[in-house]
Structure formats: C-alpha cells, structure tokens
Image 1 (cartoon, rainbow over the protein chains, first blue to last red):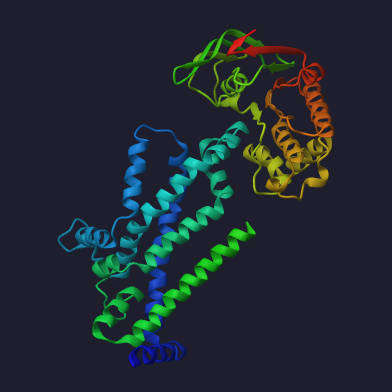
Image 2: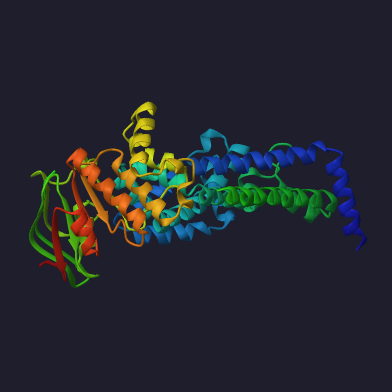
Length: 229
Length: 209
C-alpha cells in the first residue's frame, strides 16, 4: 500500500515544483481539447438548433443517426482519422498524423455528434416556442436560431462543456492519431495510460489529480453560470 | 388589411376540427371570435397568423396570399406568452431590433408603448420574472411596438385581474384607433367582446354559427 501514498506525495511534489514536463502535458491537453470543442461548437451549435426547428424529410432517421454517433467509441474515431491522415490515406500528403493538429481533428469528430445531438434535441423540444415568438414578431428562421441560442445559452454552455469533458477525458483517439510522442503529442490521458503500464505512479497520479481539478473547475463554472442565468 | 378565408378545412388525424366555407375580417375593425373549448378558435387564429400551413383552403390578405412581407405586418399574442430572459426593455424592443431601427427610434418606441400599457416601471426587470398580468402587458407592448396591420390575440386577457384587463382593453382600442389595424380577439367572455369588439363571430365544432 505504501506505493500509493508515496505516489501521492511524489505527485504533489511534481505539481508544486512546476515540473515542466507535467505542465507541458497539461497545457497541450487543454489546448487540443478546447480547440476541438470550440471548432465543433462554432459550427454545430447553430446547425443543431437550425435542424432542430426545421421540418425536413428523414428527420427521424437523422435523429437516430446523430444519437448513435453520440456514443461512438473514441478508438473508432481515432482509427478513421488515422486512416484518412496516414501517408497512404486521402489526406496523407498534408503530413498531419502524429501532430497536435491530427489530435484536434480526431477530437473534433468525437465532440461533433455530442454537441450536435444535444443542441438538436434541445431545439426540437424547447426551441419551438421561441421560434414561434420570433416568427410572429417578423423574424426569419436565422433570427429564430440566434434567439434560441441566446435564450437557451445556459443549456448550450452545458452541452459545450460536456463536449469538452468528453474530449479531455478520452484516450483512444489521441493515442492513435497522436502517438503519445514526448514533448510533441503527449497529453494527460495518454501519459496516465503509459505511466500506469510502466509502473511510474507519481506522474500518473499527478496528472490524474489535474484531470479531476479541471473537471471540478468546469463543473463549478457550469453551476455558477446556471445559477446566474 | 382585410383578411378573407375560403373553404378552410383542418384535420387532426381523422378529426375535422375546422370547416369554414367563408369568413372575412374587415380592415380597421376589432373582431371577436367566441365559442366553447374545442370549437377551433385557436386553430383558426394560427392559420390566419401563418403559424399552421397544413390546412386546406385559401387565406387572402388584401387579396394576396401570405408572403414574407405580409408576415412582417402581422403578429400574434398568446394566452401564455413567452418572454425572453432579458430586460422588459429588450423584450419590447426586439421586433424593432429585427427591423434594424436605430437606437433612438427604439428607445422612443419602447417609452411610448410602455406608457400606454402602464409598464414604464417594469422596463429594467427580467422578462421571465414577471407576474401573469405584467407579462401579458409586456407581450402586448412587444406586439404593438412595430405597428402591425394585423394583431391576433389568443385569450390575451384570460386569468388576469380586472385592472389589468381594463388596461389591456383600453390599449387595444387606442391602438386600433391610431393605426386602423385589423384586430382579431379570441375571448370566452361575452361582456369583453361587447366592450372591445365591433363584430363577433361564433364558432362551434369548427363551423361559423
């Protein structure tokens, strides 16, 4: 049992001593996951709201597909992106595999169905009333989309944060497309996985603690924002 | 704007809920629609307001089919209006913002309409935190501020206290006199239709009686 308590002591030393390797991993994790989340949110929040309020043929099938992709395993996404970005793949000439850009692409694909599905469902169930108000006051469908985003912003914020949580906590996709290369593509989850298999627990515990702190900060933000709203 | 509806049929599944051969609403008049629950009043109002395109028949507005331009001159106030989670000022100003009016015009418009509806003291409050009566007045102010030629009111004064009902009725009459808008009011209250309306139409089981 000693190795666990010793692991915690060593972990806090690493964090307090501002170990550059630890902090580089933390910053890269946050950078990759937040870039993927922002990219996905910028496009797919308005699209999700638009599709949610617009009647179109095949809407039921679309719902089923989106909900299915919401739970797509991260290794599958990683594999698909790796196939596309591999040297022999269709976008291999870009030379993106094993770079943070590839990790952002993979996580974007992972987060998109989640943000799209949650926003689409919210607009479908709760956006109708707001759309009707916009319409009766002379607004276009685009005005309705903007109004719904403004009115349901706290829910949308939660959807975006849920997407970020999914991105920062996944290991499969970034491991496959990033390769866990030291000082280049190593992020919190891939490092924890690697350190665990190497038996190097202090670093794994330190990064695990940081993941928990990030999660706590995010959920505190959601809580205070929802209360204010 | 004169509204005429021809051969209006509306079904929910197999139930025919509206079956009207002809009905018209004259420009500049306040017309009341009365009838028991389930008589098709709200369905008719939604069709006239362009909210329900799934019906048989034709509705003409000054002889024209419904289009984007007509929709901009027409509005509907619901029994339980949705107010935005913003200030009352922003709620009332919203249609003017959509029409890209300048801030000065918007401010003057909000001031004018809020004085008529006696809600000047509410302008800084949040829309979704108002009482029923206050919310209804704000919804009416929001509907009137852009001076639509057609104003459709779906039981806009039901469950309000007499004082609020009086203010709303007076403001509807004032608005009608000032703008000559076509106003259609759904009401269960025959006394209200006498006070407010120039004409009254009764519906029963989807038909005009």
